[in-house]
Length: 237
Image 1: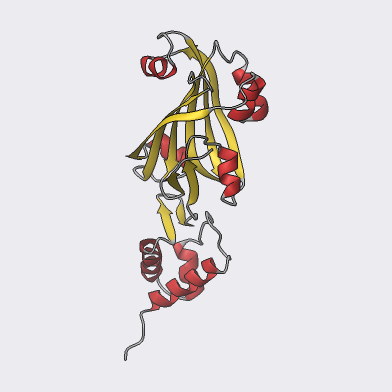
Image 2: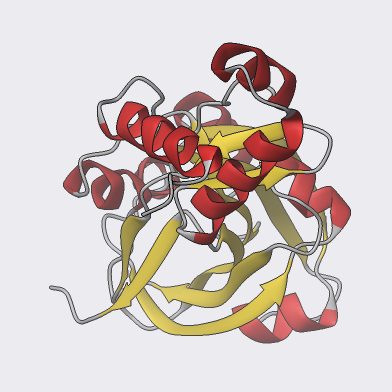
């Protein structure tokens, strides 16, 4: 029986090191040149080993950036009460949000229709990045009726929490009225925010949250990194 190709030994060694936690989710592997020098082989052999790891879903390459260990997909329930921090804590992840943009402007046609407003009414815009264990998993844009929540942007700056900002305005509870999920591909700007290659698979959700009287209070769009989040549908209390 012939000897196994060298690339399989390299693949197996790297796979073992990833499994043992030497390289964690999101970590960048050494370059092809570094690995070639380490194992005493040419770069083509290393490239074949990395390609096999990628086919197995263990790593993924980012053009111009290198090869990275894949993140374990975060289970993210989509139900009547969708709460970012609670979802991630329940999944054993460390949640974080980063504000990218806050503004008040006139509502566009789609925003006005979703929120039951007249086109041109003022709305607050909250755009940001959601992270799990320090890795970006979603880019989001939330739109709120300014007349109902006049101090929303200040509250969001202070708390970085929609739930807390609502509570600051006297809204103790809100629920998801509808959610639409569509598979998309990441355009360059979105891909850069999510640290994905352009054209990578993403999931886009469009949602409307309402208060206890059924009045729309938030219209949101979220773009999830397809390889880092598993959206699950279900009812919650």
